[in-house]
Length: 86
Image (cartoon, rainbow, N blue to C red):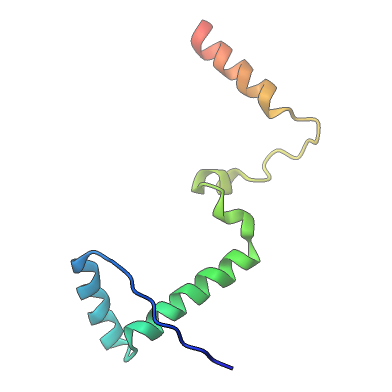
């Protein structure tokens, strides 16, 4: 059962004009395009919910340290000590 509900968004005027042109070229309504965007976002989030909280740099290096005895806090303190007290 498909229940459509109205949604009001406030966006920059230039963005709205550009997205209207894009939607027209894709032969889609703004509503359809927006719904597709949110569905894609939700599917991506569902597949990798952790990605929402990781910065691009953190994602790049995630998993690079495989040791389970790695203590990030100790490493951070050591780095800061070396950086500021050396």
